[in-house]
Image 1: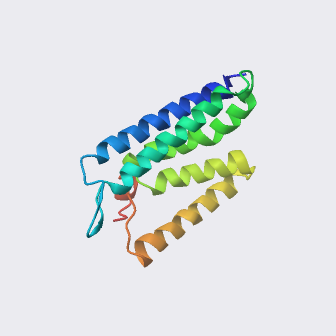
Image 2: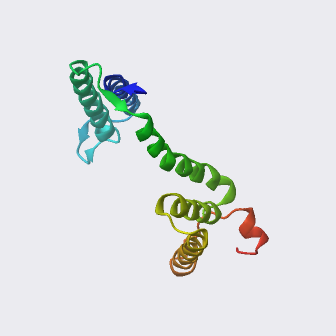
Image 3: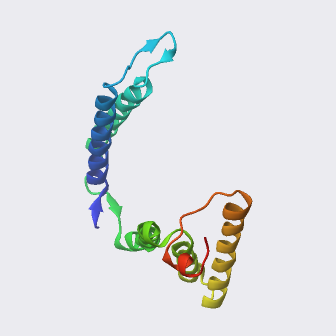
Length: 158
């Protein structure tokens, strides 16, 4: 057992309560009331912050009553989750430097090969088709340019 469910839920409840407190406190710098024109700028954020605090308090109390020995995640389950999370985190981390197209192409090809049991040829071919469709849809048809990196610059793509 890598972690106990109770510990994770208590930690999450505290983190959500802190976030709710920050939201509620920051909204106090704005009008949190209701005026002639409707709600003030801080009206909804303040109430959302209070709601987050209330819900996390309930989760905290409920977690205190939990069985202390219940496992949150096994090593096998954690490996399966990380097999999806780590490539996704790498995709997000690389986008500011390499743009959207190249990291997405690598991500799709890798995930198809690793989790879909496709051949490398089929994975690369389909990832290339998907990126070409994205390029056509966003750049050409909708005229919404997605982030491009140095490789697209070397190829003369915008």
